[in-house]
Length: 135
Ligand SMILES: [Zn+2]
Image (tube, rainbow, N blue to C red):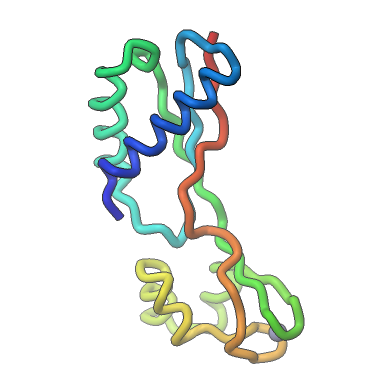
């Protein structure tokens, strides 16, 4: 994941929201980071601050990061489970691989209820702008 590109798209999304809500000064942005998304939060924060300095409306903005829990959904029995459940059924090495490379999930993960390899990662992969606060 490219933190700088990500920071740019987060600010662009925040700016759009700010315009829609007629906010002149952005005070706080809350950003949801997927549990399965490998992001260096230090770099992301640095990139956001550096880019924010170039936007008059963002210079005082605070950035709050929240973790979005992962969710896997079975395509066969519709059962849902998360990374925590997965750790109980996978070995530590496999669980770690899934954490850092979600694509690895496709190789290791089975539905914890029916054992089917046919599932989707329904949460925990993306980065979303949760809230924009300002005046
Ligand atoms: Zn299932």
